[in-house]
Structure formats: C-alpha cells, structure tokens
Length: 191
Image (cartoon, rainbow, N blue to C red; front, side, top):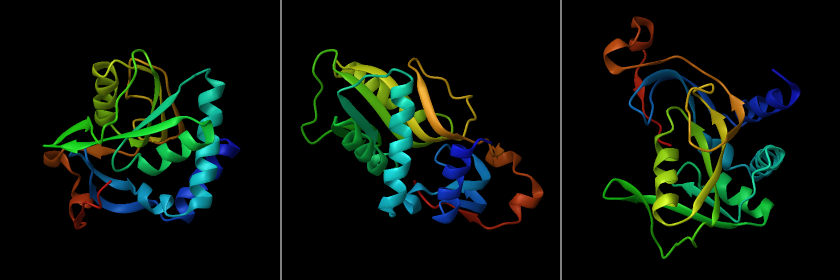
C-alpha cells in the first residue's frame, strides 16, 4: 500500500467509516466489513481531502467533464465536493418507485460530458444505473470516480473508472455465510 492509499485508509479508520461485524450490503451480499461513508462525510476536512485526491486522479487520467452526477444517498456529499473543486455543475439521481432517475428538473444537454461520482462500489449497480441515466438523457459519460472500489477492480464499466482505494473483503450470498460470521448479529447500516 502506497503512502496516499495509507492516508486514505487512515481517514476512513479515524472517522470510523470502516466498520467490522456482520453486514448485509446493498447488493444483498453479507460481509464482515462495511464502509459507512456517511461517517467520513460528516467531517468536512476529510471530505475536502478525499475530493482533492479524487479530482487529482480524475485529471491524471485525462477525464474532462462539465457535470458531476452522483447517486443518492452515498454519492451526494463527495459528488458535490468533487464538482466544487472541479468547478463543474452538480446534479444527483434519486430513487422514485425504486428506480434511480433524474428528478427536480435536472437535465443534460446533448453530449454533455458527465463524470459519475460514487462513494463505494461493490458490484457497481448504481453506477450502471447512472450510466444508463446519462445515456438516456442525451449526455455522454466520460468516467467514474469512486472513493472505494470494494470489488478490487472486478466491477467493470464501459468508461474509465478511478478509485482512491481498492479493497476486497470477502462477501457471501445469504445461503453461504461462514459459521463464524453467521454467529454475529446482522447489521444493515444503510448507505
């Protein structure tokens, strides 16, 4: 682990955003580790530093965008800070009838370059929904920026993706949870 990744891990640990126990993830999988990014996002000094590092990685990849799109809830705070630092427009997608969509009058111009910003990706479901939203609204997704890639690079997208931290903790389907983990009461802290 390089120095910048250690700094990022230290931020998550210090803010108690990296939890241990028995968790059901948004994907429905079970894990002994959980990233509760809401904990880190209540500390503006941490959010500013994480966004600074994330924007630097995005620019180093040559990704150019005019708008940041973040899925609610997890991507809201980091998405807004990334947009602020990049001097880009900021919009978000939210659920309506259990479907992620643009609401509140948000629209995209034809071929408007959009960066999707998410907090934690395990399988990438919400990112894929955001890619579809951008395409259907006429915009053009240029990349994805995430704080934590929990898939350790296994989640693949049709555009370049960058993350500050790649960690892969074991995950298990509900019917295959190891006995030691099954003995711990289940928590579903929310994202």
